[in-house]
Image (cartoon, rainbow, N blue to C red; front, side, top):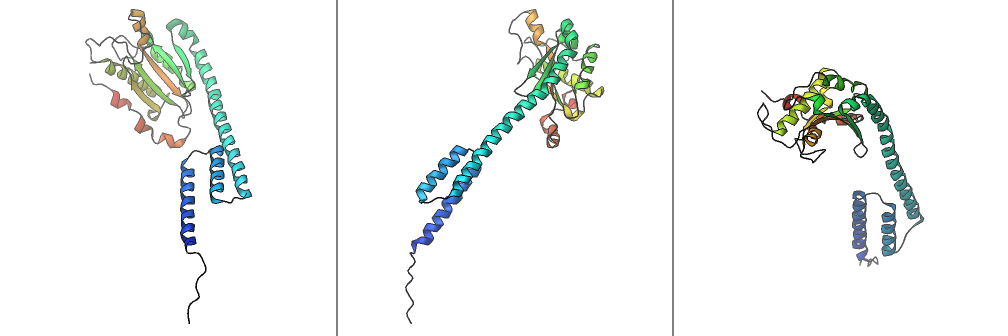
Length: 259
């Protein structure tokens, strides 16, 4: 008995496979891209026109993605504003704390809204003897003022700065060594006084690469010789970051330079 001839078009299987592959590519590209409701709507319309059919569900999906996109933007804006607003009390309190000291010794407090942190800059005349990384006796008093403003979630970065003139004599061979040793000495004192823990500390020496003044005068050089303490108040609030701090920071012991 002869078999009945199949009336199904043989190309349908190939066409179905092609459509499946196109859909897979579309989903992959969409997953890799940033959510954008307008782009999504344009792609859907293009596919609907190409494939020749659509549904009411597509319009519902477009509306959903529009709302999700708008909500994401609002949350990002609110998050940024909240962080800055939370940082202002810390900044204002530090300004008030060092107000009297600033009149006497030019301690500067500044707010970095972009990186969401506060800088306290101490000039050399109150922090270190010229060419030395030994803290002046009175400098510990200034450092102790930071204790109320540092929590277990804070990261504290000490940054040493020098002027452009080369180091002459002494134990340090370069401004890089001097600036790094000064930053390490500050962090060591903060740890010894119980203000921070080792895991919260970061030591940076930048030599003369970040000057406040370009004037080649004694006053200009004096402005550039300083040590900064940078406080990021909520750096470790995400517990996952605290596990990675050792890969980002330099330990105090590693920064100590042998005499």
